[in-house]
Image (cartoon, rainbow, N blue to C red; front, side, top):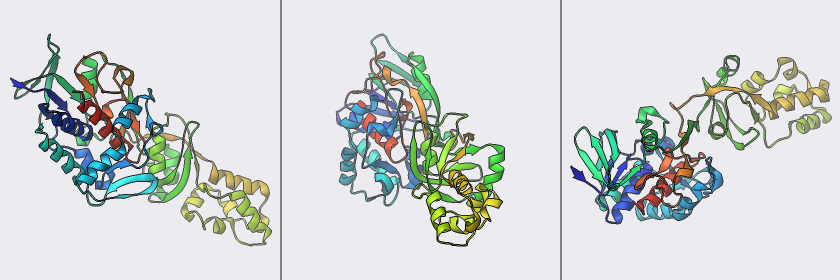
Length: 393
């Protein structure tokens, strides 16, 4: 029988943050993970550079059925607190669009920092370990059984992540633990994920694979101004990934391919200047020719500006500024960056991350029904929620 104060299940961003903080308080902490390596998703994130936080973090950047839940943790451990830690370790980083912060060198810098923090706090990390069962004993302590040992502890922290990217070892284990202790789980789905297209649209647009265009993508609830990317399977790029978290099956999205221009005004002005060019030639100043040809009927494209009517101009403008497309589905968990839904936050303390029903049982990170936008927000949620639990376990 191994006796510990705290067992953290999951050696990812939230789990390692929680473990190091609990260890700093003198708690005897064990981290268990079924993977052969700690922090696998940290290493692959941001193209290997890890978009570890954002200069601007707000509750508005998160999706949850309990929208106020994330506020407490985000204010207890902010992006500035994490940046102070980065500074301590002299990790070089840079800012990209929209306040997104990335490592200059490698995501390994972030993982090594977390592992060093754990080492300094005497945290034990045990990999390649599957938990066979968990039970709460009469004295409210917990007993965990693995193939090799039985562990007894006062607190368990579930930091198992969601279902996204199963090849990185994602499983439903965190939800199963919640289920065992009668904690409500909200429906889960893939978020920050590319769209696949209906068969007809796929045939029409797959030849555009590789084209990226700055756009505004919107539905009735949300709107994002970023690039979209045409792929062999459908649509991707930051604006599409962001919109996927707000999309419902069967719904169309509206894409403005020239959000900073007024197509009607441009075409009318050029017509009034007696510019005798084809519509296709004018539009190709702003959009790739292949994209224009895929969207607009040939008879409209080849018409000379001198012969075009206002009605035809409006039709062209509508096609470009209000292109409506109904995705077939998303690519699912295989390529999703996050999981929407999860442990119902109304059952968890927003200050400590402890279950309201089960004393000593904590949930942190992506397993909870808190999903950030693209741009470092999910990592910040991992740091903030992990830090908060680490002060109380």
